[in-house]
Length: 279
Ligand code: HPA
Image (tube, rainbow, N blue to C red):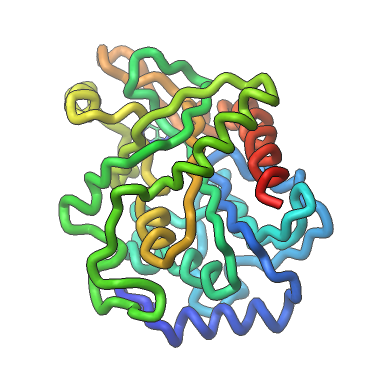
């Protein structure tokens, strides 16, 4: 596949899936680092491996299973990416977001994106959940935008508005769902960097200054593409580590995966609450 994914490539992958699964998903979900176990909540599962789908990028990261799982959650038909693709793995953002295009052709109306993040806001602690109300697309500001290249007019316009990339109604539903489930949440701004190296203390001071609450290496490209294609997005970020502002704290992928054990159960309660009100 090339940097710019074509409509033909998207249709080919979609046809492959449709030949194997008859379920028509209303909601797409992406499970971030250490959060793959949330798929266990899905009933009537039918799974396809990423590697079997023509043109679908394959995840290379530990903690990302690489399966596309169809089934029901709170009786809502869903398609779940158990594992995601990241820019730092060497893929273009067109490739990274190709699964979103396929899910759009499969008919999703809502995308629920989860991720693991580092706390930039000093009030956040590992294990916390932040509902994303906006993002800072530092990666796109530097020219790496998933919509770069020929516009796919059948999905959306050349210059899409991003004033409400995160759907306000879904955000409200997520707050109510969290409250009903007794899960306390933050609401804030997520910033996406390319990774794979974690931030230096100076990077983090800069990110705080420009308005970020949590930092990670995903989500933003997927939400830009979802919004371009008219799909409403809800973003949940699980804080796996404190920002290393003093230079004395080491950040590791292992702690990111471990934090997922605490964050996953909280997130699934919120997601269940949102889906049950979507009906
Ligand atoms: N930085 C960037 N990405 C991350 C972090 C972090 O501290 N934690 C989990 N994903």
